[in-house]
Length: 407
Image (cartoon, rainbow, N blue to C red; front, top):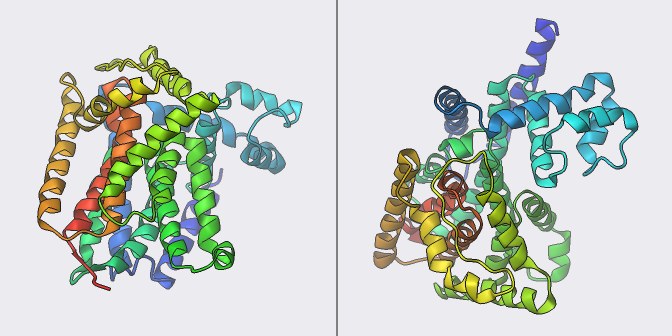
């Protein structure tokens, strides 16, 4: 590819993005200067690049390499025929694709996993915007990962008094700057989709009738974000639905009720033979027998047809997702930071007036930790999964430190 074409492919999308963010005053509810958000984007990109380099030097190849390899195979259909690439991009499976595309399907590692493949399609678009260069793929992925938190914080900010609004920027640095959120892993995008779903719900709460809700763009934003979560990581979508379904609970009791609803859904699944429990056990066993994983293991005694096995293991599941088990130095360090975050949050909760959304954020984090402890058996994966509830715990700390607006 000629250098000038590559230059155009890389810098025209970048220029349009910078122009748009400056024109619409992107993120002006959380910072008065868009240059700060641009700086955070560069920081997150640098963290993602350094993570890949560190991983290659110390541990070898990682999931990000597999994603990038699959993206290159995926995008190789584009020069052949743009129609083929669009078919890849749109079709959820390969059964309707023409025979000459089966070569790509055969060599595409994640084709049979719809969640993985959807993520690859997102990275494919990032690769096109970035001219196929890894550093630019990471940059555009971090743009997508930041869109959701900016969307949410604009709506959260109206509930709190704030003399210095730069405190919201901590949401992007703790823990989003962790390499799981900044590198090419699903966690950054999952956080973004959850933020879109919750931010859209906050908008819908302001509508007074079903008709106005159905006409609202927020309604379709909510459905789209929730649908993406269902495909990428189903239990993250279930957690959001459980907490938002309890919108009528206006106190800390939302935490207790959310766990009661979760247990009730497990009982309902058992009664109607939906097999949710068996599905979770199968996911647990898949992690347990993953030969590529060398890490500290935890295996809870879950029986898919007995809800009590899930209920009695909730404390152990949360403990594993929150503090892990002794064994791996790097993972133990991050678990220790997470435990410190929880300790700070508890201290602030004792002394402060709280808004209901703080309790909802905490409920989301605890439910996610429960699912992580149930399903993920190895500590190396658990600490990466736990970066999602880290976000909600960090946001809760920031919200608790602010004064709630009185109505």
